[in-house]
Length: 152
Image (tube, rainbow, N blue to C red):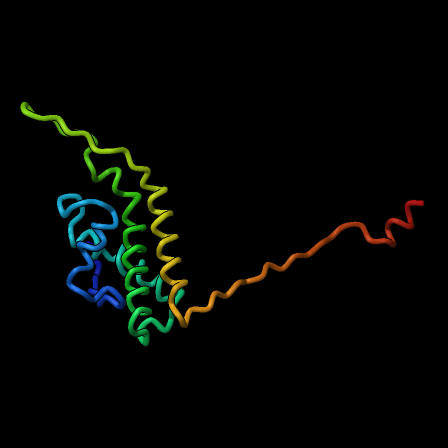
């Protein structure tokens, strides 16, 4: 039998005791929908933090508002990773003898995109952040003048 050795990775950015509630708050769900372990899953929180660290490599040196912006960006990125799975986690309707309840329809893929945009906005507010644009390299090819002259 194959056994996987899973090592716990310490959080790089989300080190407060409230980040679970903040992430659920961004999604508008409770602990009954997504647990702390669901948020801390290796395929969620470390990946989200890695995405932020890649864009803001000096995250550990940030102070004041800049530190708050990188923290908020990480919250949004974790929520963005979790958002597409919310449709399967949330019951659309609940009925009992005494009551009936229907959740509002949310486009979770669009919400995930909005959360990524929010994370990018927070990153853009960091004073030391400089956007690097990779200019695409365009190459044109087509008939040369020499080939055009040969036609006539």
